[in-house]
Image (tube, rainbow, N blue to C red; front, side, top):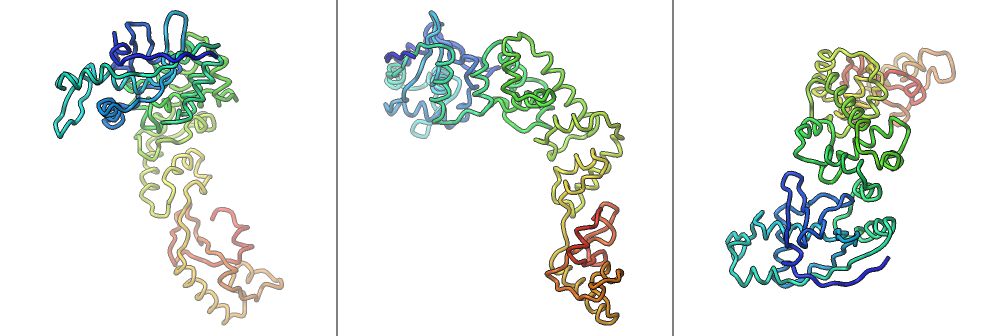
Length: 387
């Protein structure tokens, strides 16, 4: 790959600058010759009132913004690295945000002429790079190791850029999508960082026994995303039909896997909702996120709830009670051992050799109090089933 160092002023770069507020990205510069956010680039993430302001502050203090890289693509240029900085400057110059100067809020238009001239005349060092698509994308991956790291999906978008990724980003990376609020009830992540897209791709790829990489490679030049949308919508609609009230504990669960495992089972949504309320209010349940799969499994996977065990005080009270009774009867303080004629029938175990068990299983309504606590030897307690 060849690279040539060029000097541009901010004013030159921003000639014809366009920023799309709906999509949250800068589009063009250098009088239309420069594509600021090609498809392999992440969305604009500096618009937080801190990083964008820091870029402008650097220019006003005559600090260098660091090297910027353009990819030569025929007669046009693409920003390979530096689009966050360029977009921040462009947004400020076009009046999209303000900064604080000597305690006063200032837009670009309200700055003194010398300050505006300082920004526009600032020198930007740009390497213009020429190479094959593979070389350019490998370079893109390398130079983005530093700074705000790319997410894995952002890197995959770069590697497999094409009509499919473009269409998929328009659907799942657009924070203004009317469906995003609904999706966010079940998916945890920032659409601008491609985290919603990553989940959608993970679901459909896993359903086919593929990785996201292989799925993107197979569909890279598809112009439509019908298969991706159909599967994603099927998962979301299924979750909606089973769990009629979205809850914060539902965000980030493995809904794609759960759909594959349980979507052919019929559920009573009203009953499920009532049971969710009861389980989430149960102090013994220490893993609220496990409630949903526990119910989907027909209440078989009790381990998902991480039911609170008996505290040490309760264990000692139960142990002392059982041991005192054993001293009277001459039988073991483990009730199971006491009922079987063998060498352990009269054995008195130490507290450290015993474990607490629910007399009536928690899943059958048993509580984790002293009245429902029984100490068993480790062997017999671990041999029990529905604890």
